[in-house]
Structures are given as C-alpha cells and as structure tokens.
Image (tube, rainbow, N blue to C red; front, top):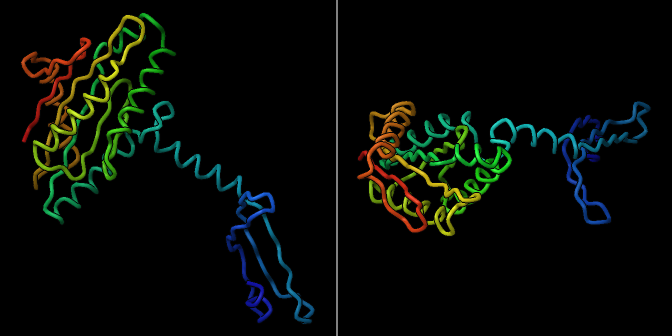
Amino acid sequence: MVRRAMAGEAVSEEMVGWLRPDGSGRLLRVSCVPDADGEGQVVVAFTDVTEERRLTMQLAHLAEHDPLADLPNRSVLEPRLEQALARATRERNRVGVRFVDLDRFRAVNDHHGHAVGDSVIVEVAERLRAVTRTGDTAVRIGGDEFVIILDPVNGCDGALSAAHRFRAVLSSPPLRRGVDVIGASMGVALSDDRDTPASLLLRADASLYRAKADPGLSIGLADEFLVGAHAIC
C-alpha cells in the first residue's frame, strides 16, 4: 500500500489484519495518500474497526438466528430450502424436511414457568445440533417447533434413519423437567421434481399432524418417551 502511495496512487480504506504484541488480533481500516508537497512522503491513516466489524457480524447473526436456541430462524428456512431443491434438481438428489414438535412442552411452562421452558428449548437445540449433519439445516420456527432440512437425503430410509438418530439423542437421557417428560412428534416429507419450498413444507407439516393424531405411528421408547414418525415418500 505504501509503495502504491509513493508511486502517486491514493489507497483508501483497505482492510488490514494486525497482530498486537500480546497476540491479540485487530482489524484496521487503512488509507495511504501521497503527501501534497511532492517530496515522496506518504500520509497513512489507521482506524481500528475491530469492534465495528464484530457488532456488524453480531447483528447479521441475530437477524438470522433465534436468540434463545441460537439456531437459524424462520427467515432462513425457505431460502435455504429453495437452494437445496435447486441443487437436488441439478445433482438428481432428493431433499428431506423433518418437522419436530415437542410434546407436553406446554405443561412444563404451566407447571414450572417460562424460564424452565426456555431451558428445555436450549437443551433440545443442543441435542439437535449434535445429530445434524454438515449440509443440513436445523431451524427453530417458533415456540416448541423445529424444522430440519436434510440435504441431501437417501430416500425414505435415510430420512427415517435421521429421525431415529434424533429420537435416540433426545431420549437418552430422557429430557425431563421436574416430573414432566418431554417428548417429540416428527413428520417427514421427501422432495420430488415438482416441489417448491412451500409444497414440501406443507407435506411435512401434514405428516407431523398425522403422526400426532395416530397412535399407530408412534414408536415407543424407554422412560415414557414417545416419538411419532411418518414419511411421505
């Protein structure tokens, strides 16, 4: 930058990483301009923008993430799913969507208060992250509802296998608050070439409610934990 400025070219607002003697890193906005007197001198101005950049990134993160679960929020869901469907068309893959709805969550809020309910959401999000593959997206869409985009998914077997993995991690140890055992119902839908984000989400949502309404679709687990799973293939 200095060489360019000494050659007569003004260099403005370049970002430069700077390592301080204590080992901490800073981000500097640097401008270099030739001195007006023409004697080959250069004026260099530094502005430390580390905190400015950190706050900008933090605000961008908050705009797309649920503040409690620290998972992507509803605003991310359809754009991510649209990208996944476009990629599946190009690569001749399929995309899965899994709806997850917590059972008996309202009882926790009613019996123990919203602070305890919040702790359940945080723990569910942590367990969900533990079994979410690279490339998949787990989203909290609000309240006690989550959506997972499986990108790609290996047919019905792959989608149900992912549901079983989440069931296992959510139920071992059982997710308890006080005397209440929190369960989950799940609905799965797989994409075809005609799907849009809206149509795939609608089918997964319908699958979830069929699982909640039909005891025959429930899979019994230890410690009273029940998960409903139903796939539309």
